[in-house]
Every structure is written in structure tokens, then in C-alpha cells.
Image (cartoon, rainbow, N blue to C red; front, top):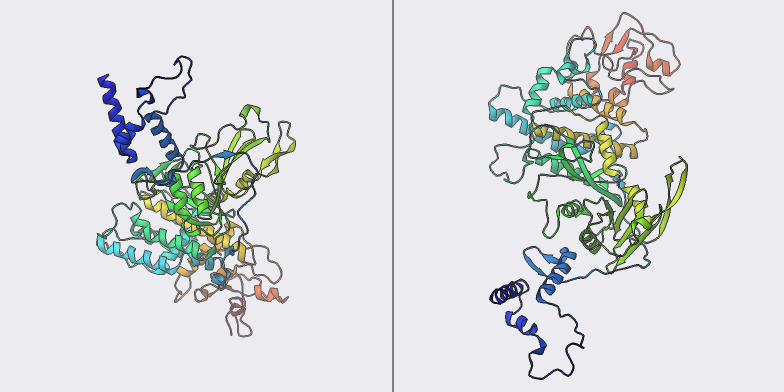
Length: 590
């Protein structure tokens, strides 16, 4: 009896401390009612008693209500500020998202002066980024007291351009690009930058000052912080965010040693740096955040990791009516309720063991393909259970309970229409934005091995900048290009910008044309404008023993076969006392 009384008093004291209730009041409320002096009117054996809730039951019930609504709790105090019990009911509900009144897509006024692919790329990769890289790289050379010529803007642009070329023209090692062997040589490389100069820039490349004593101790991405912040700002600055956004994980390949390396078995790139990315269905990445590990500032008070990532990536769109889609890693009832209160609509697949989900839905064994069941909570969150090949669970804070149809392949190979909730249909349409961006980055991305962990991330950020510039160019430019031709145009323009005007006698064997000859349409040049009109001062005439058809005269229907040829464009052009097609071809007024 003594032990039992001691444990009861201890539990009472803990309960009183947890909920700030007077200990004596609890003891009085839990006194049995049969302590009075009066005798009972009936026989105790014939009476029926309702079980009184014990103190332990009250405590567990209160904790369950708090856990159902963690967004209503204060992280520094376990007491619930406002207890909310979510109740579920099967009732019809309409879509409550309303119309979207904001503009979507690239801001055309920001790209009025952009005509060529290089212009779109340099809009995101702006002068602030370039000047910072040059300043920090030269500062690093001075700190290490190395005897290296000062890095200039042409060096940086040539370095970036050559790395882009290495993405779509792959060789086992970057040193092979400067090889003299005919099956390995790439003449563009030595004509742009020597291998020694390329290695000097690569080994001294820096984005931030390592010796800065004011650097925050918790920031593991200090080496790349200025570049990360600048790109995040530019991606939002020049693009009106579309209404439908998706949030997912993205990986940058890295197999070396780093405390930032993560393992994601469900991704095509399983080991590397994990990034949280927000993108639209076109693949445009409007915001990203590199994951630095547990306890590094990502988490938010009262929310888990996945929920905190959603809040961090949606800071700039809260209250604007966007629709955000994410998978079951991020989805929970608290985050859906929180976003709804901030007028941000969200939908995502959800794990069936999440807390607070409704009970009593149709059993999975009783559902045929295309059947679904749903419940709507008293705070307008809808939960769907739909049977496809397997059971799919989706939660939304704005979708209606209406259904649509989707096509599915049957076992015999035929296509059939099956019923599907509108929430799941929209999820499948808008959720693939980050995966599409990853696909575009992986086609011709720079994936060279490096001993420095942040080099991988640096080149990964260049890939993502190129993809965003390509998407904007595809929407605004009159001439549509494939991703490969877009990258070639940007790379060759950067290479052209890196070459100073050559003085003196021209080389005996000029480098081959950067753009291979192709069948020319009428009134169209065989050389792209990015090469023909860029840095005209670099172009000069060389004279060949054989003759060739003048491209300008040919476009006018005139027969002319001169010896003169443009060194850069590698096309024959007339240049004599009677006419000068060289100037006309390069847009130079005579």
C-alpha cells in the first residue's frame, strides 16, 4: 500500500507540473464518491457503474490531443496554447483555391535586350558573381603567396566556357583536351586557354574568403555562400513564379569525403550533396537550399525536417495563392493546416501511418482499381484513399472531392479509363518539375571529378543556371533551340569573349570553325549570330591557296570564289578593292 500511494503521489505531482494545475485540486476531484456516511439505497451487486477516468487516462488523452496538432504547441513549453481536435466526416467539398491573379513566367521587360543565348545566361550569371569570383580567386593567390598572373574577366569566361564544352564533349580526363593525338585533340581548347593557365584557374578558384574571422561557425557552405545567395535572388528576380510549384530533393554527384554527403537510395544519383528545390512543371528552379545536416538551422520550432523545408522554400510565396505539391516525405496534417491558414494551397502524398489520419475508411481488400474513399476534416483538409495497382494516400487543403478519369494499361496491353480523384490527377501533372530539372542538368552537365568537395557543387550550380536560362530562352526567343545547341552557343560565345584581338601576322593553321558547316537555308548564314557578331575585333582575314564560294555573294545569287576567308567563322568572304563582304557578313558599317 505504501508503494502504491507513493507512486500515485509522484504521478499526481508530475501531472500538476505538466499542466500547471493545483495538486490539491486534483486530489479532491479524484476522491471516490462513496466516502460519505450515508448508506447506498441499492445493493452494490445490482448497480451498474460507469468507469471514472483516472488521472493517467486524462493525461494520455491530453497528450494525444496535443500530438494531433503540433502546430498549436510551443516548442519551449509542452503546454498547448490552443487545443484543437481534428474531426473527420465523409461529406462533399468544393475546390476553394479560387483564381490566380498574378503574372506567370519570365519578366519580359528584364529580357528586352536579350537576343542570343549568351545574353540569357549572363542575366543570371551576372557581373556581381563574376567580379566576386575574380576578387576572391586573386585574393587567395596573394594569401598563398603563389606566383600566378592575375586572373581577369576573359580568363573566367574562357574557363567557364571550356567547362561547358567538356559537359557535352566528354573525355576521360580534362588533360586529354589539350592532347596532340588526332583522336583526342580538341583544337578549341588550346586556342582559347593553355592547359597550364586552365589548371592555375582551377586550383585557385574561390568564391569566398577562407580567412574571414567573422564567418559563422555553423555555416558549412561558407565557401559558396555568396554564389548560393546570388543565384537564389536572380532566379526569383527575373521570373514571375507560376501558380503550380513542386518541392522535392535533388542530388549533385559526389563520392569523396564530406560531412555534407548524403545517401538517397531512391534517386538516380544515390550519393552526393542533397538540395531541396522548388520548381514548376517546366523545370524552372525558382528556389533551392543545400542540406547541411541535422541541427544546422534548417528546422523550425514545432515542425519536423520535411515540414521545415517546405516552410523555408515557400517564404516568398506565402499568402499569394500558389499551389504547392510535395511527396510523402514532406506531407503531414500540421503543415497542410499551417499553409492553409497562410493562403497557400498544398497537396501531397502522405504516409498511411501519419498521426491524425481518419479511421474507418474502406479496407484495401474491398477496393477495386479506380475505387476511392475520402474524409473531410473540420478544418477543410481532405484525405483520399485511392486504389491503383497499389493503394495511394493523398491529403490536400484545397481540392474538392470530385473525381476525373485517367488512362491505365491493363494486363492484356489495352488502355482503359479508370476513376481517379482530382487531387491525385493534379499531383501527377505538377509534381515532376524538380525531376525534369534534374533530367536537363544530367544530359550535358559538367561532371568532372575533383578533390575539393565544393568544386562539384560549383559546377552543379552552373548546370542549374544554364537550365534556367535555357527555359527562359525557350519561352521568349523567336528561334527555338535544343538544349545541346543552346549550350554550344553559350560556350562558344564565352570562348569568343575570352579572346583578346590578335595583333600581327595570323597563324599559319587557324583553328577549325567552332560551328560545323551545315546546309544553309535561303537568307540564313551557316554561322550562328553568337559567333558571327560576337567580339568582331577578334575576326580577321586569312588567305588560302584554294578558292571557296563567298557566302554573302551566294545569298545574293552572285557567283564569286575568293581566296580570302574569316579566321574565326571559317567561311570564304570577298575582300578586295571592289567589294568587302567581310564587313557585311559581320554587320560592320562601311
